[in-house]
Length: 425
Image (cartoon, rainbow, N blue to C red; front, side, top):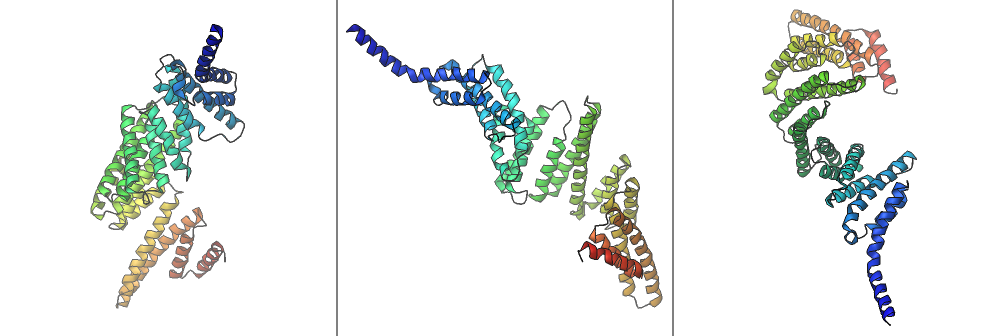
């Protein structure tokens, strides 16, 4: 009787304990499967173990989350290596597991957990950075997870800002709330970079200033704020170039960084020029700034071209000299020769308009002769532009009109045929 009673009590105890024991056992068997190189089986067992984390022994909670994260990462890597379609949710889910493992606060596993976070965070950032179109919005929460894991990483907030912008459809289409979130991410990027600068120069920071300038210009209609942001971007680009010259970086990597810095510097200069062109009251300031820049860096064709663009409306003679300097420094630059052709064409047209308004035949003839001399200059530059890009229809049409004005009918007929071919006629 006692034995039967004891047996029934024991059976009851075992029945009550078996679910928890089974879950703890699943943790062990899941870890064994992982260590045996079977991440899929490990995931199956660890999913069962974590169906009710509260039922696990305290020592098994962090272990279960840690090894499930490792199994997710390995399963993803294996599928990628086999050219299969890996589960896109695997890496974000692995970060959730690692954050849960960290929260379990198991000192024995702390270093392993942080090691896996260090391994996973860059993968998630790269995956998010590759997201485009409809996937951009999906990738934003991935970076939220990375931010929780590594709150000081400036790359996370920068890429998230870019994803927010793409998901919103650009600066013009983004809502005020979306612009606010983008701006906050960009400003956080600057703060984090200042607090934890990387050992290798990074063009990210001048790019961030460019993006803040774009918000100021396109959304706030604040040219002053845009110019301040651009100035900070140019300062940052120059500082990065100086740092790169001193850094111990393989030449191939250094060349890539220099190219990226050059690109963002050109973009900042172009944007600065656009701001000055749209702010007539700031034009003289822009001219003075670019004149000083050409003195500091006289071999830079971008600066001379920007100066020429600002000078054109008020001082066309100096604009011509600046364009010609830009051409001298970069003979194959299409924009430079095209703009010189357009500038001489406009000067010729202005002189012809004056001539047509005169009743004095002699004075009109003198102005027409002067206009034709300007048009000959225009043709010389437009022909160079046509040689650089024979498919540019604007250049071809410009040459047609110039040849007519100069009564060069054979050249006009030849260019007319070129235009017909370009237009599919």
